[in-house]
Image (tube, rainbow, N blue to C red):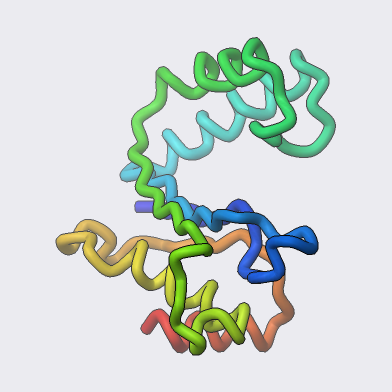
Length: 142
């Protein structure tokens, strides 16, 4: 099993100065590596056809591009879990003052209630951060 995790938005709380109002962390779960590879190929082909240079940015795409993306991945077997955080409703200073704690907490929360589905899964987390941050995140999740 392969699990891919990515986020949208940022962990900052300076919303009036450019931070996003929401933070989203999502995972795509492939029970079969072949399905993951075929899905990746279909996305890459759609990018070429639609002339998307790097990655799909849904908030910047028109509906036709979004529809084409979903048509490209619809035939494949995967599930998605996502967590959407309205940062205006976060009052915990521990989370508000440290971006890494905020990020780690919500990734862990996303993974927490899996009912054993993720046991033995290979988890890849996309995102920024240096090597030390990634090591700390790995320790935190274990």
